[in-house]
Length: 338
Ligand SMILES: NC(=O)c1ccc[n+]([C@@H]2O[C@H](COP(=O)([O-])OP(=O)(O)OC[C@H]3O[C@@H](n4cnc5c(N)ncnc54)[C@H](OP(=O)(O)O)[C@@H]3O)[C@@H](O)[C@H]2O)c1
Image 1 (tube, rainbow, N blue to C red):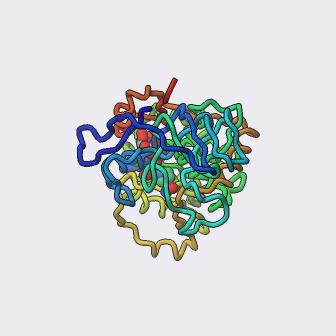
Image 2 (cartoon, protein in one colour):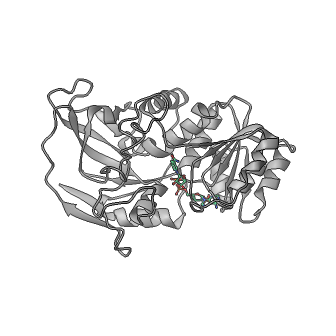
Image 3 (cartoon, helix red, strand yellow):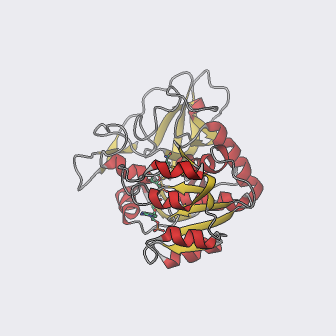
């Protein structure tokens, strides 16, 4: 069997493949032959050891995978050999509010990840998949899609007719675009690239703003909303974008604070929230219950993930480099196994 390990101290080759023997299966565990893995921006941070937790040398990276159950422990009841499953980002966050005990053990950072031919999990740490999704499509869901779902519908309670602002055309933003349009919302999306904005419009975006040619893009947002601002911001940037998101959000609106694309520091002054009676809510992916609700909604609305490009298992370092280039639109997938 083959798997990748991250080696942050070797920046020239942060991902290296090794052979391994799968450990014996525990009574409540399942073994999954991973068929596809998707990359998230955090996998870049993990490979550089700049993520929220220290990354041990050799850790198996990536939180997102989908595959086939090939063995089950003797106490496993909910799954059988042959079932198609995806991994949960937080294997212990089954539902309800986040708690320190459940929002821990994040895959591909605090515990071993999915960039491996054989993945072992407690039966509760994976979720069964509908037949309508391919393994590549399903592998895009555990982090970016659940994060977008949580931000729009759990934390923000988005209503039809409201307006959502999305920053850039990466994985989280494109899922948020698809979900917000299915929910009957208006979408304003930004990008550094007019061709990507055109693709976003084809997916239903109502307005696109090039943040390179409009560095003061919050002015465009206010113009497009007749000065009112947006109901929800999916804030994936950080320093430099959060100030503009604060200017873009409407009175009583919500900023779902998700990302660190521009860094982990802070420049924004939260006092701007007071006269707007607005709020910023931190997001940390989501639970199995959110994942299940999201799968139902995707089936109802016929939503398919947008895959930018698929790479072979041997090309995983090139896939990570593609993510770092920022040239992608939606999700990057690595095929695993035969
Ligand atoms: N808190 C959580 O639970 C959670 C979960 C998932 C992701 N995240 C975070 O959310 C962020 C996005 O993740 P992702 O996986 O969707 O990333 P991604 O797919 O790599 O998205 C990258 C895209 O973001 C856009 N971008 C980059 N810098 C920007 C800027 N200054 N202003 C506006 N857009 C910018 C670019 O889009 P264009 O090419 O169109 O310009 C770029 O292609 C990351 O920081 C990630 O760590 C957090």
